[in-house]
Image (tube, rainbow over the protein chains, first blue to last red):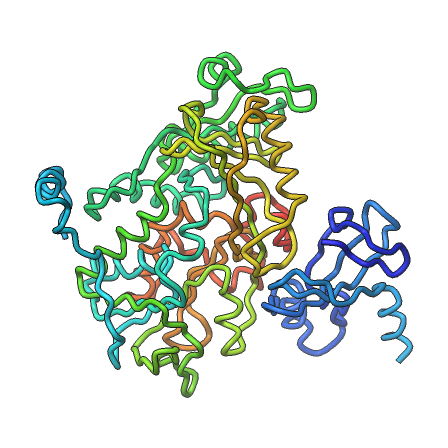
Length: 94
Length: 416
């Protein structure tokens, strides 16, 4: 698989480390209500879809950025690649 | 149908005209006591043990494809009981004991071949870890011994003992481990379950569950509604898809694992050899092909096929361990979908919907577990309580912090 890195262009996926579901970007607040249930969900439960999946890839053998890759888990087609830090900044600005 | 040496001779005289299909091809009835979703090794074993040990025969096994089309026909056929943790090892030893008697029990030749499993080590600290594991195996009633370099040089002289990165210092040896003809396991269980009255319904996909007031009373399938008192799901790589139909998120990611087979060779590899440091293991099939594999690809996938970097990595591992493999040619590669759990260990448990049960999270270790998984799942389905050898394979171990993590990798499924 080739991942179209927003800054570096097409890179081989074997340069990356895979971290799974991009829901890991949204860590629950430990002061929130039901934080225990939320953390169990965050730590252990996954939707694991057959189809479009947003997931985290870390460019370890490159610029060490975290990417959010939107990929089809049935065909391995990569639909979209974004920098995780930009997504996070955008979310925080709201 | 009963198999025997006499029957083979007799059929030989009759031009083999008397052989019959091993199982019927029934239409689903309206009502069953138990429906098993998933006609793979584990599902068929569950149906067989329910009929054999618990006298429940009003059972349907519904299978989306044809029987044995999933991981039971895609694995690398290895059986062993060389685990470390007390929650795991007795379970796998139970499984190995069931394997040892499987062919007699099913009256079916599944080619159970106990040629031994060898785990190679390369350093003092790795040896110490394997000694500890060997002791854990002995304590569970399994067999294990530590072999030194000289023993290995006699047994497997073709290994690269002087490899500069991973020089071979010895191995953990389990003589009772080995290989089994994997398709024949599904066929044998199907034959015996069917002959006890179990309906095996192929090309019948479970599309939803029938649930009312928090109770499950059947499944909706492509062949209509089928009602039952209890429903047991065991669908391996499709676990999240099937349980997702009623909104249950599982502690599971689906990953693709590739396997490889070379062209047929004369006998060269005596048993199973694993080279953990190089992510490579190998055995030789009865037809002579070298059957080998390595790690999962490492990303979520439902594709049943992998990518080239892992093929390269596995072949490099093979070359590092046993350079002679470079002379053989790779014949086929394929992939299967693994239900990788968050701690690398399985789940055999009730769900929060009454009468709905779940068996999954086998990672890439489901094949060796087939008999014990069926046995313990049948126990749970029949009695409502966990079998004592599977009492820790519960959903709530994640929230309770009682993970069964053989490698100590944490909640990262692609590292187990």
